Length: 213
Image 1 (cartoon, rainbow, N blue to C red):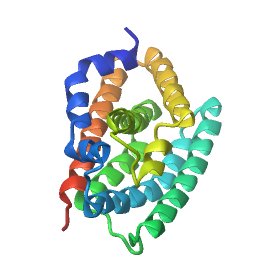
Image 2: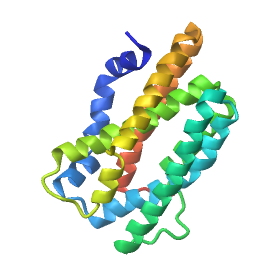
Image 3: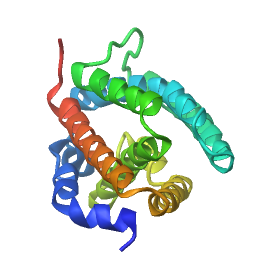
Image 4: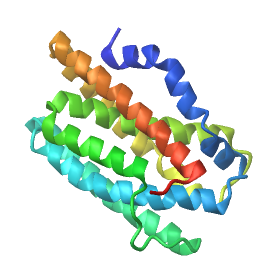
């Protein structure tokens, strides 16, 4: 079994628990409160903003054939920031001077340390886990939607063909990196995938329940 498929089989129950988070269920049902959705919008805006230097760190270790894709990812993140800003303005959500909540700051720093100190293959596993988690989470929302959402642009952004193609590319590259990796390095890649998945679930909990220092 290929590395990525093996990961998803091994952690299938954990992945399902992430998709079952009430934030996603309420967005799909159209019952999410504006306050709860604003929690997510503010915190994910900060996360996306800080993801840009995190990707730049990864580029410094990337093989030549991977650099263009990471550069494209930075451009996509810049476009996402514009989407956040437009949706925040449209729905009266202030994103000025937003401070990252404890979980968000922990996740940002987890990825920053990963990209700075870990081997490229390990950092790549974290990138795949984060992007695949977002794709599957928003696909889950879209599949369960009972009607159009006031937040539809966000749902459509992370279920688009372009984003699916990006996640497919990450999976292909991760399988190739794993095939060439030692047993010990593959174990580190797997661990990073699992840790990233856990942070993704915690982020949905943060959005639903709120969090402060």
